[in-house]
Image (cartoon, rainbow, N blue to C red; front, side, top):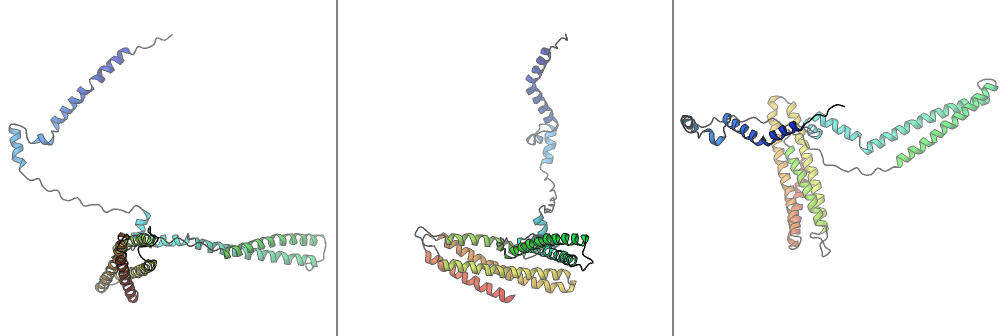
Length: 331
């Protein structure tokens, strides 16, 4: 039998080294401090080294040139689509292709084509059956009778397919699709001057929607802080104003594309037009923000001062309605 190895001596040496681990760590730290002294001791050594360090200590450190920040590279498809017009166009086409209404229309077209195919085949076999049964293809005999039976069976089969496909087509045409949820409108490209105002408009729309929802909630007395008519007017006016502002942003983008394609001598006039439209867009965003502020004050004053909050909301709504009308007339 093989003799078992005795590991007692090895275990004793291992325990001894484990006990001396703190000493090893302290020695390693001392050697590290010898070659890389701490910051508070680098210039404070006594003797000649300390004096030499003191002579150079008063010298101001050379200013390091600022490291240029690397431009952030968009990693998401949405960010790339917002900066590259070609990608945005492809994405828009893909979204239109996957819309429920577009899929439904393609399904209707496919079903209509299949119905046409089945009807044509049914007519073909029906004519073949009649010709074989009446002997117009030749003398009626065994083979002709077999052809007539086979043609009749094929006519019955494809006629059934035609009826089922016709019923399916009728059902598809009667189907009413639910309204697709309207997502937020796409923002202008990152290089457009209309991008920043449209971002502010999107934020203001979200805030106004929440504030108007708060104003529509009845209080403990069973009434709303602001009459429902005023809330409905504010909501309709804000929608109309947002549509007008987005139309103005679309005109700015169209002029920007024309400016980029125009000769150099004509770009200054187009740039002046863009600057003017941007000012009008900023005024519109500011007017929209006034309506948001008025709605916020109405929510804050929902417990008391209802008359004041209602008047402020009504005034802001009227001003925004006039601004939206002016922007619509401008277009």
